[in-house]
Image (cartoon, rainbow, N blue to C red; front, side):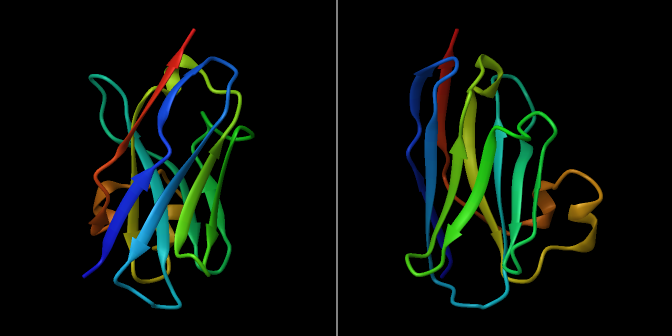
Length: 129
């Protein structure tokens, strides 16, 4: 059974940094597609960053140059390094996974919830001005 557990959220001031981590278990496929989504207060859940097992990545325009998605395959951990945080980065952050390479459309348009069948429970990030 695939399980995703996020941790590392917290409260920081604008300009600060946080690292989110997602511990994965229950799958050992060599091919996968993983992502971070977030949902701000009163907003829809949106894709933030995507990573394919072949190393390809893509980011939302709002976080390019500030966020970095990566994996530690030995530890089965997906991470999101967030720098120069802004109040608009506030929200619940979710880890998501698919046990195949990312669908081609992920590289052409923002990732969608339906692209990922497996989800974590989320971790809260709050950025104060």
